[in-house]
Length: 417
Image (cartoon, rainbow, N blue to C red; front, side, top):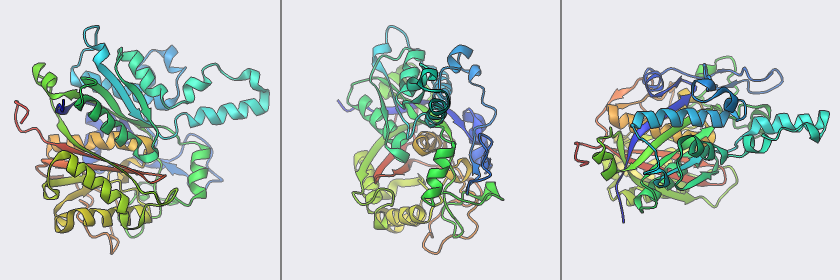
């Protein structure tokens, strides 16, 4: 069995908006979600900025009692899953619950509750630890809670591949449906680690931007003045569905998932392989899986973190794979507006890629004022662009040299062609 798989619903909780419409509008308008950190005192930190989610009220999406017992990253995922499910018009009941699964990606899980619990033990002893501590912390509680809330009894798993986790989750979910092990998968990514240890840890690695006096211009992928990435938070969830089922129930289709690639750099704990060699193999694997040629790709949602090495090596990898066609691809680095959601990045960026296909609009790369000499591709600087996108690619690369790439395709008519 090799079934076709489509995206029939999306849900978003991001630093630039809550919900598909608000977020997409802000993205296309080039609005930044980066600002000063409000969660803790940053006065002694090198970096004092992040992409925090604003105006999020978990009780809008789940009961107050339940909201108090889950960590922020789980709340974001439940909210995004509710929005995605409602958007898809999907009904999950006793007739199909065992054929509906959940597979999501998360890099660090409940880091905030880990920090506060460790301090509590030091100050007041182990007897004061909440019985909800472990469930609030572990990353797979996100797909677990989504399954519980939506009665999805099919395959259930969590991916923890650093900044590639969300994309790996969507790709793995795609393959589960393609091979017939489920009919529907609720998938994507989530993260919420704007915490002292996260910021301090990335500062120790010199990975974060320190442009504290101008937060909205701090994330500047492919720009010569880039000085590191900005941590973001949120969740992007998609409903993947077998095409025949989607057509049978008359579902809206945003895009078809047609290709998935994975690779490992086998090079360094945190640095990408020279020249983006691992990323290039990942993109090639996705293109082969999709059964298309390199020249058919119209748009790429780049990993585009705003670090010196990533942006250079991703550009080199794109040139290596696409040759002269690389200069004809509209490339967006949406982290310039949302910040880097780490394990959740692939979730929201797959949604962005699907919406770019659906609306025929490619989001801009914000703050690209003086491109690096080596970064000379079309990064859609500053303003969104109308473009008929047939095939689009979304890239995610993570620490440990783990790479993931998805290819989506436009559905051209109601028959699924």
